[in-house]
Length: 354
Image (cartoon, rainbow, N blue to C red; front, top):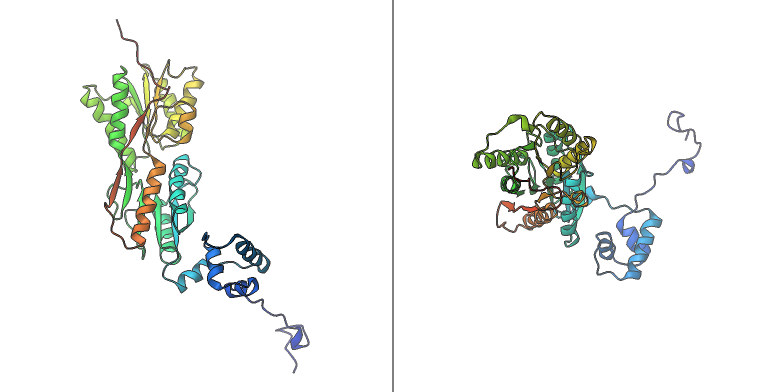
């Protein structure tokens, strides 16, 4: 039989290339001399497999080049023991703190975690990206999804979802939220008690509910203290160090600058430190600064801030999601995390005027 040139340049059937067969979990089990369930337990990180057996199986997996196909596994079983995490920026200090708690909860559970990120907290089209990621994960390979700082109010999904600190006021899904308004009131009352009356405020992103609640707390505290709100002391921001820096420069170059600045988050507060240093001001002698979040960097610069226990928020959200995956009822649909003012060295009392 002559094989047409258009199909092959080989002259015999035995010379035709063969397709490499995909290595299966059964191949791994046979080669290692163990059951398929034992291989499966090693792949899922179970601790009840003997150390030498585990090493042998891992060696065979490496040698054969076996990879577990998550999508295929999800089609074979309705339970995947896998949770998804959608986070806007995996490198943002806020996100890192939340993820610490999520990681702790995952370590205590039988679930694994798959992370999706947009790579930028300010990236446009956040709602569309979130909805796409949730649909991709929950309709195929995960049992449920955690969304950090979610921008979308609702999702089309076949599995449960939960949000940590959602951007929207009343999301149509369970969430864990900080008490942002009360945290802002605590900051303002603290600064007012120290004698500050001209207090600057650097806002967060206006489309985010937590940012609006902090601004409202700032204004309400001034009203309660019978201090007129000066709009020149309120500057736009976006929760970044850069916006904190530029806004602080504007505040500190006013003809009558503030004696204290309340930044809507710690990242912005770090920008205030930079601006003050550039202008030759000393903290807290010349300027008092307060932030919000209590990220790791806050402690190193002595920043007085509001701890909203971000790590604990991530931990609780993960536990709530696992309950939903297991069809267990939630105690509450919205878990409110109390805030706490953390006093450090970035503020001082004003000298009384004689």
